[in-house]
Amino acid sequence: MTQFVICGGRRMQGEVEISGAKNAAVAILPAAFLVDGECRIENIPQISDVTLLLESMRDMGAHIRTVNRTAMDISCQALAYHEPGPALGEIRASYYFIGALLGRFGEARVPMPGGCDIGVRPIDQHLKGMRAMGAEIRVEGGFVCAQARGGRLHGANIYLDVVSVGATMNIMLAAALARGKTVIENAAREPHIVDLANFLNAMGADVRGAGTSVIRVFGVDKLHGGSYTIIPDQIEAGTYLAAAAAAGGDVLVRGVIPRHLFSITAKLAEMGAEIIDLGDAVRIHTEGPLHCANVKTMPYPGFPTDMQPQIVTCLALAEGTSVVTEDVWDNRFKYVSELSKMGAKIQVDGKTAVVEGVEKLSGATVKACDLRAGAAIVIAGLAAQGVTRVTDIHHIQRGYEDLVAKLRGLGAEIREEEIPEETEVGRSLA
Ligand code: EPZ
Image 1 (cartoon, helix red, strand yellow):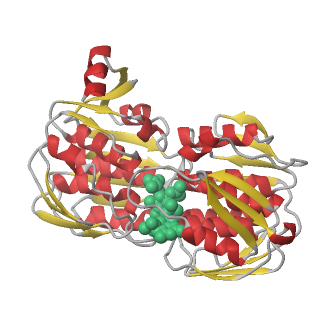
Image 2 (tube, protein in one colour):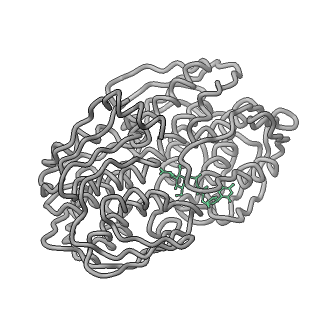
């Protein structure tokens, strides 16, 4: 097992290129099941969630050819129905296989989704939508088993009781080849929802209204091949901006769509960082300590929950007291105990954290509890005085491409190294 070792306290300086969006890629790749032809998908992030997903697709008979480091040709033409293996259940996005397989084959048996432990993560809205479209669904033995009555789904009017990214995208996948029109009311509006709609439309689907809260999908009989480039990852970009804000510095975050980052850059500006929008890049410059600010997470265009741990780390080093409310997930402050080991002063009460800024954090051995919590801990390590060791980094590798190389390019002292055996024994006995 490996860990990150960070010698903190260095200002960050330089440029970083942002990879393709994880939460778009994990829906667009299984969307290739719907396509009767070959799709070239570009800007695929090189992260472990994507590797696992592509392996599952290959095992199910998809032909996947690497074009270059971030582009693949995927062909699911003439594919017969195959069940994904249980390994797929390790990632949250396994649920997109339900919509894609049900849409293409009229049946799906998919392991219940795993993913980050950030609270109860039901998929009732996904299943409600697909039932309305004529699917019979049971959950048994850890699998979701779905069958379209008559072999093909039909359109339906679906009102989502909660604004759900996954349910919105899953229903879009299921509806692309359904008979008739599907309307999704109270849909989520994240950039990756628009990206999935754009991908499907590029392959011949008819999806309208993505990016608003009402999406209409007019089912078509077939999708054809084509090529598509995934959008840049807003959360990866936000993470580097937060790192520069916490550690101090002058960083150019390249290859982004600045309007996708607006809630993040506006908050960093409120905290005293200088932000410059350069069209396809954002520059951040910070001098001196940040100021406190209140943050509430919300569905897009609100402040993203996937940036909550990183912004809390910035606020832990800001002047004054901030209140952070997590309004999407019910248990996303678990990492606070790790930040406390580094000297952060944060009180959590349910879905609210009161963050009293301190002058400095100090290095410690800390654990990445989940993907974004892990990113937050790395940011804390970069800003802290002394050496921080981050364990359980597999969580971070699920969603950040080349984190170590990118941070080193910004002048950070960070490396990945084997955890010495005696420490591992100690840890497993703990
Ligand atoms: C996606 O999860 C992302 N994951 C999450 O990112 C992100 O935190 C989340 O959207 C919100 O932006 C992927 O895209 C793979 P939701 P998802 O359905 O789709 C409730 C990361 O760090 N809900 O929008 O699973 C749910 O409990 C990850 O990259 C229901 O009640 O999230 C939550 O409170 C972590 N019933 C809220 O809705 C449902 O059927 C929003 O969840 C579905 C959701």
